[in-house]
Image (cartoon, one colour):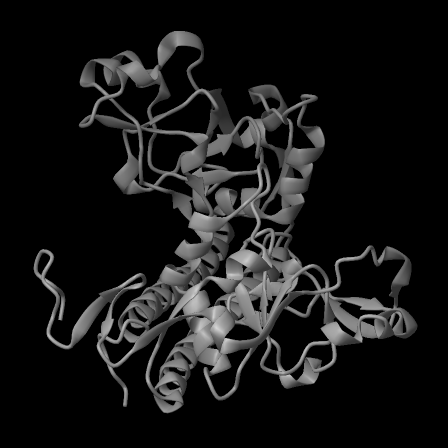
Length: 423
């Protein structure tokens, strides 16, 4: 179905929104709506109450839905003066600031609610399906319109005048619009279920870490006291190279990777866009090479970030903004130590002792002085294995979630341009 060069496929025509089927139309959104207006725009702070009429803000607007976990309430008497702006089920709310153009649908339970400085579109029911219209506005094509037409200097925004001219590709029947919206809604439900699974698994991991890394819960077969040690007693800590040792001009396309703070991720070192240096530089900087089981620790900025070095990263270098922690294998099992570093208790300790006025900083002496609670090596190994298994599940679920989002984007591209017809 894709055109070759500038050729237009049979049954399609070129429009301002790209190629669409010949039986589709393109109309500005104002011709499909009974009303496009701005929500309450007057200062309302004095009317805030603990209960009353719900008022949504731009930050409550998410792609396709309203996040009602943090809503405001306003006085009923004050709200009465803005009754002409009350929301109806099926209205669309579009963010003016923050993420301008992001659009959600007002559900039935918020019929009669208000919104503060958002854009409100009331689709004409015999002209367009609200769900379809919301899907298009949040699509790549819809959002690119706002990207091109935003106003403002430091903080970009959109206004009702811009929104009114949004061109909308329109299938000929509401039945087809509804079918497209339903298919994309099913994809959203799939994504939401995966998001919930990821959140549940992450919560499980945090609970397991709190119990296992403190000795509150012991694995079967393990007894005995845990011991508090300073990190300096169980590991060597070394600062990365400073000064003019490494410069961007020394980087090469094919060489030894250097891990920087930006590459320290939740589940280890992220391998994208790693700077690299020549073999000669690697030899010159061999004192800063990494072994399997080393842990790189952020020295500046986000000082609680750290990552365990895996076999594929052996022999890599670490930058001057990192510290290298090399565990004494007779006392500490590196994966267990890495999980300790990711625990909230250790992170709080790091943040509390970091120095610097404008940016938090660590050094070898500070990090070496921090206490770590450790059991025997076999128990450390067992705890790390349990947490590794949970991590593997989280990583697998997040890969599925990323794939689901990618599939949905592909569906939107095909369905909202008529390349795939459902009716």
